[in-house]
Image 1 (cartoon, rainbow, N blue to C red):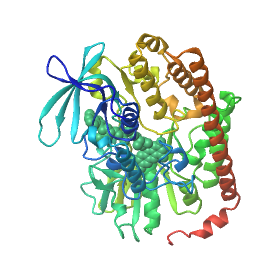
Image 2: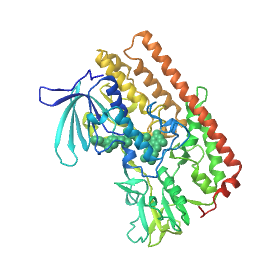
Image 3: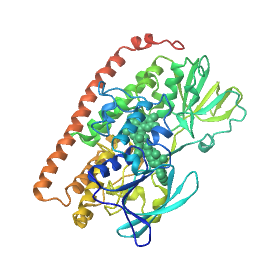
Image 4: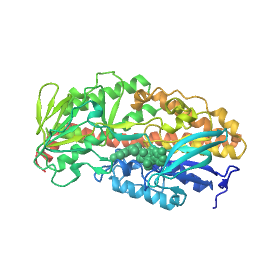
Length: 501
Ligand SMILES: Cc1cc2nc3c(=O)[nH]c(=O)nc-3n(C[C@H](O)[C@H](O)[C@H](O)COP(=O)(O)OP(=O)(O)OC[C@H]3O[C@@H](n4cnc5c(N)ncnc54)[C@H](O)[C@@H]3O)c2cc1C
């Protein structure tokens, strides 16, 4: 199938490309694959020399998926693990699958690797100028795009100790590193023998911190301490999030009941593990940091990990001093205090677009089908996540081709977006879910004849129901596994004694 919309050279001598995609992570690849399938010419700009985005830049060799394989399937032909839908696949396998996907659709042919988009300017209502710099040579250039798809991701660099207002580590004599991967360097716990017999202190309680915690446990650290900054934040295993999505998206669950059930359920889990001091006040802002599995709860219950809520005031040669005055022995210091989050790609400012404000159109950065976006979290923020955003964008492309652009623009009513904090715990904000689904439905039905619209509606409704049922099944299976663990702590404890492999 050859492209039906082809690139051409404009009267100003600038390449005119139907679709320019910024970013070669999963979201950019999803958009590129749609271009290939629909015969639309495109150019994808990727700053790195490889596809994969976060899975290249931030994941290390022992990183793994934070959701189940079944829920991290961006294409039906590319299951990460067909045999075990509950597995949390390791980063190398995720990356291999991403590369296989790009290869299958020959996306590399239309990709400019090692090329960073620097500015984006509106040329007219129907085109956008995209300027780029080749990273190695510094060579610059400009192309003209009829439509732009922004898939540049939202995660920036990991935040340094100083970035969080912590003291310098100059005096520290032990091993210190970032968690995950940072500027090409992997977390030191990935090196065999680093943790053995050592006191490991991990700053942070997010996914990377808990990954490091598990690596330290596997590596036979003498002690493992997690230090959380004082703040109101749940640490929620992704396994538990099924329950929340199940509650949030279920047709009959009122919002207050969903919130109440979550608080009660998470509170019980925290108390059981003896880390109740880390739980946010009941009914507080529903902010959370996600982790992969129940390891924090299990290791805390076994006494294998110590969880502290405090602030580091000094890093000495072999110890970390806390605001409370306590000094913790420390041989290995892991910084896992989060990444900068870039909701607003800098180059979009010139288009007068504000990612946070304009994302209210769900898939579009503004009231136009010509500028689309998809970012991050493959599944949970929006059921089906970026797939829906990509779908909407290409529905817009279809309307443009059929001369029905205005019908699509009319469908782009603002969708309330209450801000990222409030949205982060999905069940706390089911209205966000519902509003986004409604926006998706409106855009998907725009520009269709009535019978096509009716059939599309049937397909959309059944896919919603399918997602909800999938969550229900996952939720039931996880609940069984977890209740077994909650009921028999001795079995969990005897499976691994503190300090023993
Ligand atoms: C260890 C780990 C586990 C995870 N587990 C899960 C999980 O279980 N479930 C889940 O849903 N998510 C998970 N995630 C989140 C994951 O990041 C997303 O699922 C997804 O990979 C994000 O894809 P993306 O395309 O939005 O962004 P990215 O992967 O960030 O890709 C963006 C790309 O754009 C490129 N780029 C940026 N700016 C420019 C520019 N100006 N010019 C050119 N190129 C540019 C970047 O180089 C990058 O390649 C995990 C992440 C990590 C690191």
